[in-house]
Amino acid sequence: MSEQNLNKNKQLDLERYVPALITYLANKLSSGASQHYRSEFGVGVVEWRVMALLAVEPAITANRVCKVIGLDKAAVSRAIKSLDSAALITLEKSDKDARQILINLSAEGREKHDAILHVALAREARLLEVLSAEEREQLIVMLQKLNEQIPKVNA
Image (cartoon, rainbow, N blue to C red):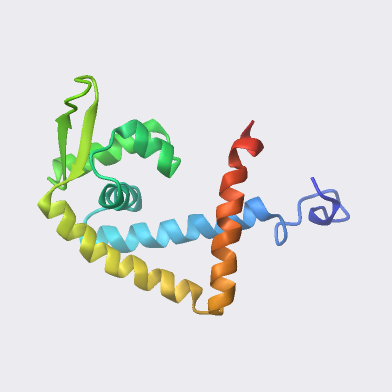
């Protein structure tokens, strides 16, 4: 741990400790999104994340969802069950491997995705409005670099 992230009492300086700053920001964004999406659209933020991934990468397995989003299998399983119960996704056996179940957005799921996407992008715009276009691009590049470091950090 770097010395700059310790205060004189040998405690983390939570105003400078990057993992905490990222976690706090992510938790607050997720909480606010979940409240809003549940009240307006009937889905929580985990279901939304699954829907957003399916819009980008259709016909994938639950394991793929876990890998891309970084959620545990139990959370993804609950989200898939909820989305299936609401008829927002379809589940079908893979032609290549009958043990694999492929997940897709249903027509209703695609409509709901598109409605939520509008709100999600507006929330992102409000978050980033304090940054210049150059700062936004730098932030994206830095976050991508940090994401690439996760395997090393978790090794």
